Image 1 (cartoon, rainbow, N blue to C red):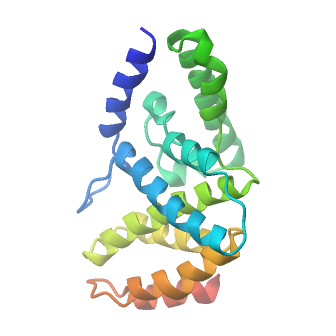
Image 2 (image 1 turned 45 degrees about the vertical axis):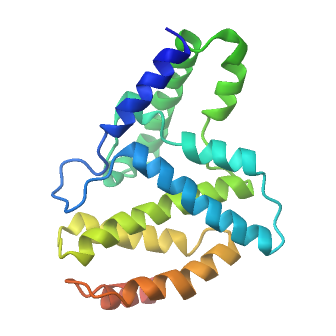
Length: 209
């Protein structure tokens, strides 16, 4: 079915709900997540570029908009499950890679296949663009958890998501982005009126980080 099937499969990303099986005040789907990650990466890529880094914008956009396409095949695996062990995480990644490989070979015309293999590979790597993808991906996890805690959702899952995302954001090797997040964005976030004391929770996380 070719590119037509690829295009129609994008609709499936709108029906895959992130963090399934939990009560949420706001539902988020994978398609919207990918768009938001691209927006975050664009901002922080601009910030890093202003601080002297070289940004391959084509690579950055390709990494961000495609980074979760493989969830078309396996859905969104809950973060605690996905990270339960290094072995399980590696196995899930292997399954995604193999299903993506089969999809490209079956559905993508041969003249485009090498391009798709490159675009759809794991984007989180040691490049600046890979680090920006990881930063933006964790930032969306931070915001999804923040939105639930702000409205009073005390499910431990979202407390854990908030803690994991915050700690990870602070150690990614992007000094300009980390400093801006910690000193500007995070301060604006915890200054908001919330049903759960996010300011205290954040201080406890920062103290233990």
